[in-house]
Image (tube, helix red, strand yellow):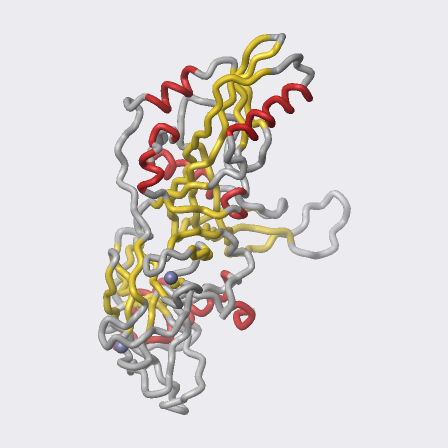
Amino acid sequence: MGVPAEARVHILIRCPQCGGTIDFLEEARVIHCRFCGTDLLVAGREGVLRYVISPLVGEERRARLLAVEHLLKSGKHSPRTGEAFLFYAPFWRMQGTVYRWVFGLKPLKVQVEAGVPPPMERFKVLLVRAMDHTIPGYSGLDLGLGSLGVRPQVLRLRPFSPEHLEKRNSFLPLEFSLEEAQADAEHYADYFFQAEKLIPEVTLQKIVGLRFSVIYFPLWYVDCSHEGGREILLLDAVGRSPVQTIPDGSSLLSKLKGNETRKSFRFSELRFLPFRCPNCGWAFPFQPLSILHFCPTCRHLFREKGGEWAELAYSVIPSPEAPQPTNSLWVPFWRCRTRLESRGKGVENMADLYRLAPPPRVVDGKRESRRPIYFYVPAVKFRNPKTIHSLGSRLTFVQPDLDLGSFEDGSHPLTVGGSLGKRAG
Ligand SMILES: [Zn+2]
Ligand SMILES: [Zn+2]
């Protein structure tokens, strides 16, 4: 099962076994060291991680040359450079998937006389959008960078390390709080393209899998003087271009040197677990995008939770025609016991649910009233949200008649949380 093409964010770490550099895609849950051959599970993603983007302009001499070059180009005479140093500015990165249901009216595709409005028909549509935005994490400064744009997606991110902590004074303090970033995420989730002629009546929106990280971006501070005066030039240490000119660098310097604006914040750290079944010690099948791992030897299912392996219960729905198929394609679903509320009334069992959403078949009300509501949500990524929706709703409404079993020899579930790619269509 391949990695989807849009997954391009790379993370660089040192292999905890041999020290070799491992370059892996951000989405990867399991990584492989090509130096020592170890497979590792990536843990510690529940919290806020912080990353550093390495400068491409690393030498002070080179930064000064770039500054002088820029000053000459902008018509300044006899430019000279004074103090020059590299520093890092924090940015909040917010990622998630936004789903939006739109219910409303749209014009019918029929011929109408000029000047007569077309008749309208009701429609419902499920829209989906991947969200990946960065916003400044510092405040009170204009560094000329409103966001990092697509930079995090094309550059290598390194986890913030003790070596970075030693150079604390090179890092601008994170002053924009997580709460503020969360409020901004809601705002960014609202950007959707919508066809003009649609008249939405009800929209329901949810950000799924929202996570935050902090990315430190490198900039050069170059104190410049020329015949016309003095200015501070800020250079993008990756793009090699000037991003801002400020008349005075004192507020930037005091933020870097001072401690008063440094609030303590609990960051999470990436950790790595041996990729072996904690029950029997056998190596798990290498499925880099999967969040659950099925041991083919002892048939137990595991996930990472708080930096440790945790077992997860599962059941299978065998095919009624062939109870022990060996070449079936198994699709995992999350099963969630659900209790709903509608107009202040509890919706507790399938009979209640069928009253709200009548099925196109006769149901035995008495029998359904004894059945709890389970929502079935596909645990694989499908490109098309309609596929997720129709699979989920179909199983939610037919499952009460199904018998649950367990995996027989030779059966193996699909990657959970992975992508079905072409198969999903
Ligand atoms: Zn290694
Ligand atoms: Zn096992």
